[in-house]
Length: 277
Image (cartoon, rainbow, N blue to C red; front, side, top):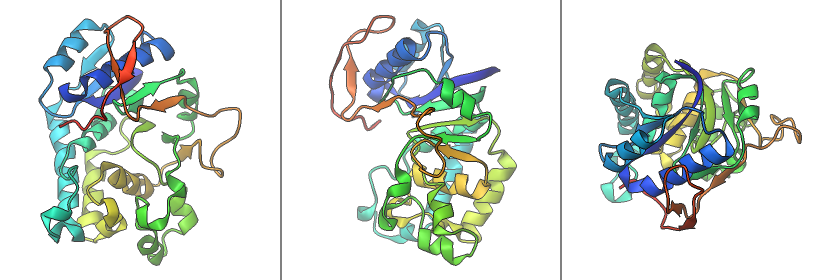
């Protein structure tokens, strides 16, 4: 088992973005760092070809773990009060496979960074590795500034429990497109306990109905409830500015297409935003 590596989530639909990310990691992070691609679904012909062309890239193939995380997310979403609403009100992402990124917590790296496939790595990850010595989750985003109606967690509902203040909750808000963490933080037993809280004790309503089907919203609940140390470079009370920030992440919006792969400096041109489907 490697001590540190990188995960991403991809299929053939986002192949061009995947190659852009892999090339940026090779160029700006390290040419030797191990990378594991988590399959979004079974459309993987191009992805497998790319894996075979690179010495340090593998495909995550533990389908039992993938299925366990799929079932966890789908069972939680099915318990939310908004599940009963008309299907016309559901996002196209409902019951997608974005939650498969959580297999990283049962993966092959002791410590890791996850990048969305429509991202580019712009600098080495030394500061992330250093922060993982004292924190279990590392983020670099502005989710804590969102207004209550669109925040990942239902802040008012959680406050009513008396367990957390709004400041406590906001300090734990984050996205899921980039994060650093560690293997083993969410064991099978811990996930079962969390599922009981969510479904039986109705803590599923802690997840904002605005995005109740969203992997990021579920992830926010998980990191809040597990009560492990979390660090965010963009949170004024958490970040030790300016020396250690930031992570040098560039989000392709729209993403880029890489015309040559692998081992050649990529040429980027604009492409429509990826949707995995």
